[in-house]
Image (cartoon, rainbow, N blue to C red; front, side):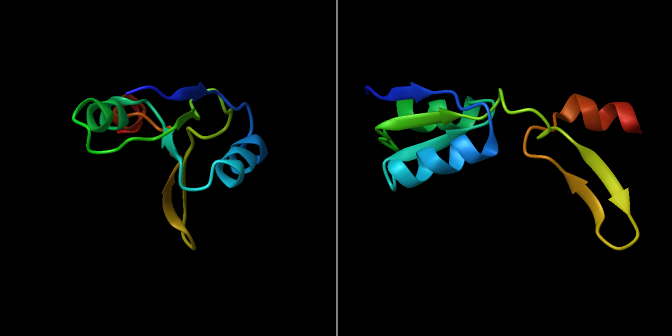
Length: 83
């Protein structure tokens, strides 16, 4: 399966790509699950948008009103380190 690999550097750029390639793209944040789905022919995206270069998506926060919040790029290792 062939696809174009895109690496946006901001959330705004990612949203623009998603709008431009509406229904033809998949977001990848790490890649294991997306790549397995592509290899198994479960999905056939024309574009893969890798968001790992976008800063600030790896946060861990907690407050009484919103509770625990994890960014989409938060790793299991980061969670282990706060315990």
